[in-house]
Image (cartoon, rainbow, N blue to C red; front, side):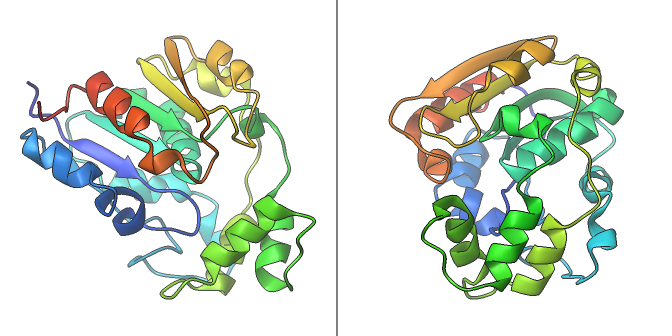
Length: 226
């Protein structure tokens, strides 16, 4: 089994602790004898929490700065998956294999950021359940809602097929069949070497705890402890 480090990148309004340690990911990979890297993205967890959207423009650079010199395997969820893809498009040599979950055609659309930021700042709105779920996450103890709204308002353009064509390493794409990011086919088709796993009866927010996701991802990066 490889001794290559495994990088974990969490989703929006959560942290490495909540996304990866609590469901058991980090312990499983450690049991397999692989070193883990699990940073908190800017504005999240133990990272600094700037309130200026411009501070988040190059979110992926902080991720690259946390990497060792040798290529890593990497697993990302939602915002973490997008951040990984942007980083790998710019520096594919820094990665060996990628697992990206909770992303799909939403990566190609310029939408959602202001809606979620406004939901974080505003009152409950049951007519927009996805935005409201992110609002609830942003207001969990330990989170900084102002910083998270700023993160959503960061200067960022949608990804393009040309961007993803530069991600030439093997990529496992994992998505729940009830995820709001669907359809996933445009993402899979844009990646040169992609494999798709669909999680049955799983929505966006249930993805990190899916045993199928855990099993498929760790097998893909050769980090299963059994």
